Image (cartoon, rainbow, N blue to C red; front, side, top):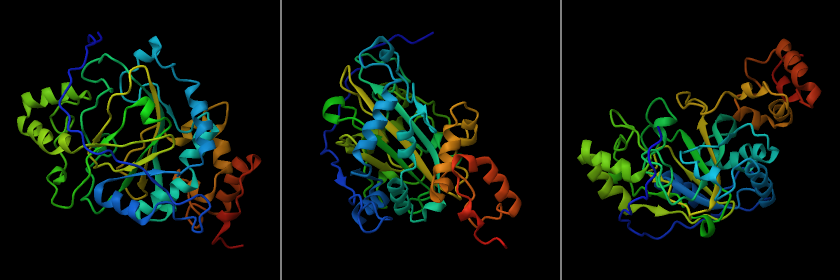
Length: 362
């Protein structure tokens, strides 16, 4: 039985200066493997986030948004009012939209992730890529409602372990905004880390719903009331060190928020009647196998009549295939026999097997 809807009780907020986006290095710059400025990389590594414009070509994002919103309920519709939980109504990679697939594996995005993790693109793996709608509503559906989120870190539903200490990041999380905050609202709030002694980021990071024996709740009012009852020290920590320090990102169409599994953040309410579309992505280090892929395996998508994934593999670059877990040139997988087999599978779709012959005896 669904919980009765209620009007959220306003909670006191500290209004801090917004986080403003900065431009990425321009498209067509002299160094193709440098998309983020040194200051943006440092901010992600030290403060836990970087807010960046101009990562993608605008026309690609316009096409992507048109493709995906065609399948979402219209803002203000009865169907939209029923979309209340995180990720509800999402579309997952590989998408039926070629533009959305291109965004998820875009060379500039992969280069930016490579910069942040400090490894080559071949060492990066895609573990999340989904596009989902969030709607502005006046009523809350209860403790799992996604409108006004509790402050949290994302790692509990991404990894089987706990992130390593701060200076050993394993993954990059991404929110690509496809609307304007001035119209839609719903700015993501982040808590910038303030150095290794910051009490908000004391290791390990534990003080949130859904950790240990604490129940998972999404709605801020419900979560904080629950914590005040069962874990008052945790509730006081959050009231003292997290909510008063949150800063909302001022996104525009195409803004990218790069953050981390161990960055404190939360979603905030949208303008009533509005729609906000975002593309959430996560890329992990190849060796961090305990970070789960959040969707069905990519090969499962080949059980489809439209053959989107087969064509994507055939047309992708060597680096893009690596990001999906395809064996790179020089990997022990490649033998004369496997070269022939893979060429037979994808060759008719335009796959070039030549790079994978590297290191094999003639």
